[in-house]
Image 1: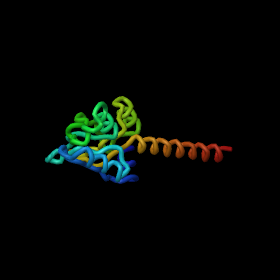
Image 2 (image 1 turned 90 degrees about the horizontal axis):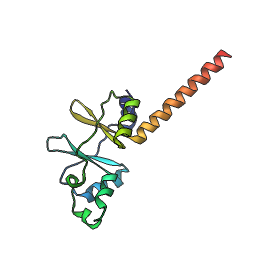
Image 3 (image 1 turned 60 degrees about the vertical axis):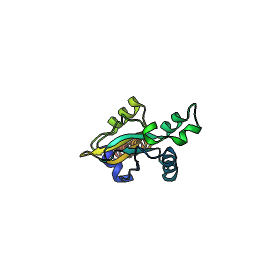
Image 4 (image 1 turned 120 degrees about the vertical axis):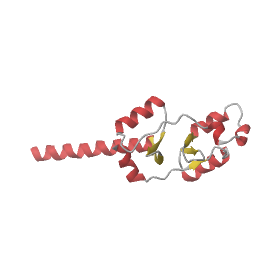
Length: 144
């Protein structure tokens, strides 16, 4: 249950935009909140897509000035990979690596309940390795 553990530590805040929101609004939100992606929600509150920093950069190729007139719908990734609160660290790493993505919305009972980034997964992995090392040290010290 790595996802649930991560969300307990970092919280469940998810920044969202609507399909018609401007790219400028999205860029301002990413910068202001120091985040790498926002979820695009449809009128019913479901996931319509995701916009990451990469999506913004890709939209700029060949037409930097034209990005200003674009909306979330124009640049979003519509096929969104998600995870659940019960997914493990290994499952997260596999999904993110295979899909070449850095952000996964967490979905529970049909609702977005959080966002996991690759940085969150790396932090969890480091914590796990440190805990394991401490356990090994304790075991070795008690056996000697």
